[in-house]
Length: 221
Image (cartoon, rainbow, N blue to C red):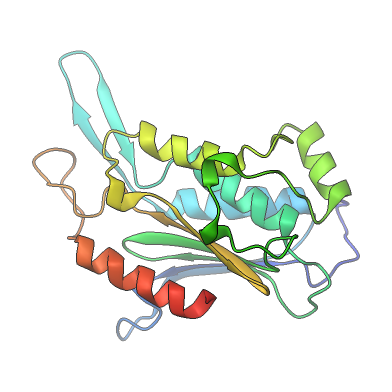
């Protein structure tokens, strides 16, 4: 938590990739940054990186302008906070990764679930809070960056369901194995009809999402 932390390997690697994977063309990455420092600065810098690299579509009504961000900012912060709080800091030479693609944002951290369970096998609406790093979790709770009631997964899901562009095929996906944990947040504006909101965006499909899910299952099973 200090401004000059002793844990030099506590870093976050943030990358905005060009396309749908890590090798889409001549220019692999549009933006990237390696953040170091206190846990608070890691959280703030990582959230700012995502916000700076995502777009906002918008639609005008008779009285107001309604904005449609690619990702709910509160869900992004919650995921990054969870990655910093619950990562395994005994894994030297590893770090938290924030990878942005055209259609999704993937946040991964060292260390699986503290009790050894697989998050993809749990009821995310009723996950009991178990903390690997008690002091870090307590500090973030006292600073109001998180709740200490095991509601993180539920809060992320609710943030997505609240958005007008949400559909079931864009539900966040959580996966873990004994060595790592990841969450995939889908771009709410990817594939949205241009005549409904904004004038940019690509094309997505249920089959594309399933293919990503299959790749994640191979990695985390």
